Length: 308
Ligand SMILES: [Zn+2]
Image 1 (cartoon, rainbow, N blue to C red):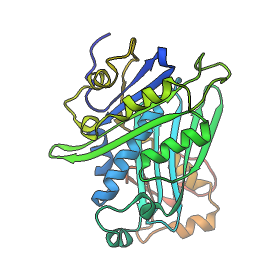
Image 2: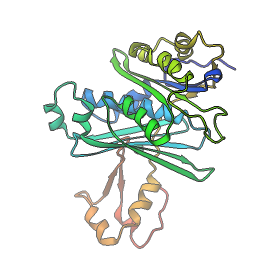
Image 3: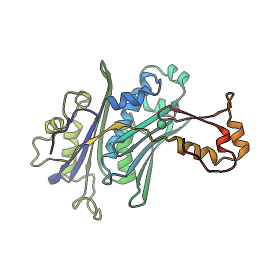
Image 4: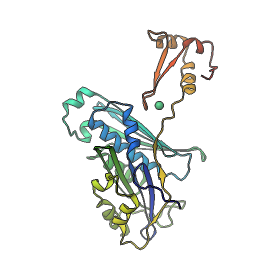
């Protein structure tokens, strides 16, 4: 295998067969910078989005099918943040957060997860287009951190004992965000009926302790290759397999043709109401802040959309 730089904007998979455990480790650098550059978020929101993007990458790295998609969504009732959305498709990541800047400023420099989200929910959707499968799990957004909320997701929604660690810091050269996810799989692993998924399986606490011993600085250190990090954590295990690396990038899939086709489906009178002072309908992509200007006359009279 050609050596891939396993330092940043990359995820790798790990299997520890003798312990029935699998893991994913990811680190993001310039991909996070590129995503954050489309927005002007305060530091608290930037850090949270950086962690959420790493979490999304870890979920994405679990997909077996290249066309599979992961969407992570946190929604709240009356929280400072009312919506957080990240998604993953083929190594491409994007995300945004909608929040109330005034209330955030009042919450101080280190608001708790509860202060940010209030009574919130975390929904994770797995889309497998080839198998035409869609699966969504929803859990209350509880705990001190996004990592803990993700652990709850696996425990409650999937009944898979899991450990999740996330960290993000802004360095001189830009953001660095890293994370790991380890899970206990039953004997026989994927594709078979789960028989022995139990929290008290003796192999699991051992792996959870080793994985949980990772330091935030190790997750975010852009000079520490991920395979070296895995070695540090698990070098006493008999066999640790790593899977091929997945390159991670920022990618937005907003598409002017699609945006126009959506607007074209609105009734005429609703479209009229969307026309701005300059006579154009403007639609902004929430993910990348690209603004699409649409000439209303192009859309009148039906849903035929000409390609720009
Ligand atoms: Zn976009």
